[in-house]
Amino acid sequence: MAAAVALWYVYGTGNVERAEVRQGAAESELKKILFPPDGGTVSLGSYHRPDNALASASSIGGRFNLRELKTYFDAELGKNGWVFISEKPLEDWGSNVGGLVRRYCKGPLSAAWQYAGPKNAEWTYALSVTWDEKCITVGNR
Image (cartoon, rainbow, N blue to C red; front, side):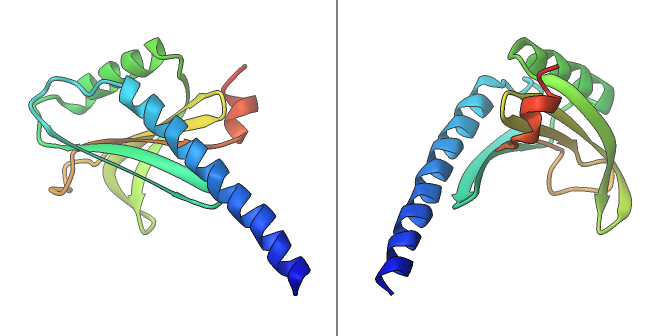
């Protein structure tokens, strides 16, 4: 029993501390990315669990269209050292909702910029940063 408690303490608290550090790194990187001055309302949030962390910001409203937002975020992320990786349609339960997701990498961090599409009234676009060790090899070519 004591061994199990010791293992939990060593691995459990170590993972929580590592997740807190990762959350801080994700929050720091997210704060470097400026959202466009398009009049949208931005909300921020972050969390961690023992094995990972996420920081995100979303906007509702604004006057920029998809093309303008893609151009803006590509430039903003690029000037902050992010490398574009992929783009795919945004899906909700397997159904294309008319939006898109663009993924970027920077070191061990992954960023996902999402455009909600015309059918979503709850948010217009969002950016999230999370820890993704696959980015170490993929994003740093």
